[in-house]
Length: 307
Image 1 (cartoon, rainbow, N blue to C red):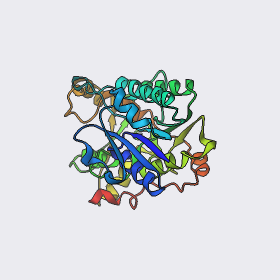
Image 2 (cartoon, one colour):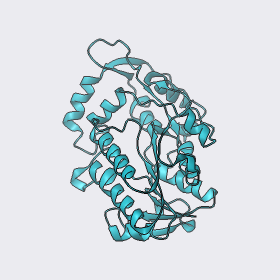
Image 3 (cartoon, rainbow, N blue to C red):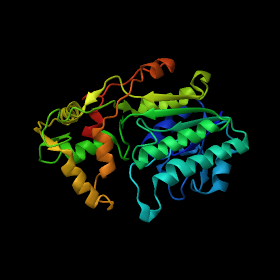
């Protein structure tokens, strides 16, 4: 089976290519000119050079494929470089869905996000919009909604590595964010970190699993962990003793609202808001359906942070 993959050169994309090839699928990937060197197992892939806003290149990637995986996503916008949630999460995804219909490619798997909803941040809204459009097509679709994804970044951006670099390694106490002025429940919002290998395996196993068609499936790890526990696990993995103190999230939002227009600033106000609202899910049924053993988030599975 030939599988068209959009978003193959990033963090999750490299694991998707691994999982596809290990199961004898043939990836046909769209890569931006000059990005071919970032592709894992390039010799085993059919490579189409182009961009997701190029309908001709999109069609060439899909036309001889049996299925499509859309894994394109960004965590922040850079409007000056025409990198926006609307363009990549919805417009390009819609273009790929329409092209799959035109080409008669029946199967479509979409990478969405836990927390996607119509009244959320622009990130969450555009993920939700793509889900809704996909459901209106006659494609045999599946949507996956992962929580935060961790694992060896292979030189890419990754959740735990960012926290190590920005919070654990600096010689400052770790911030336990909280809403309001009084630090009740500081750092107690929870996430469900899911290992990137589990995410990639879910996508690939779903390709020929009819029970996943027409479903929106959560992807999360075996444990819902609070922010404090996550930071302590990362600190333990890199052999650091760290003090953690309450930090009012309004102060971080205030600074982010001023500076998040600049690429060098590490976080946006919306990212802070999504973080403290929590990001948990119960993926027990998903993992059982696809016969995947969930990888926990702990100092052993975070050993890559010492590299």
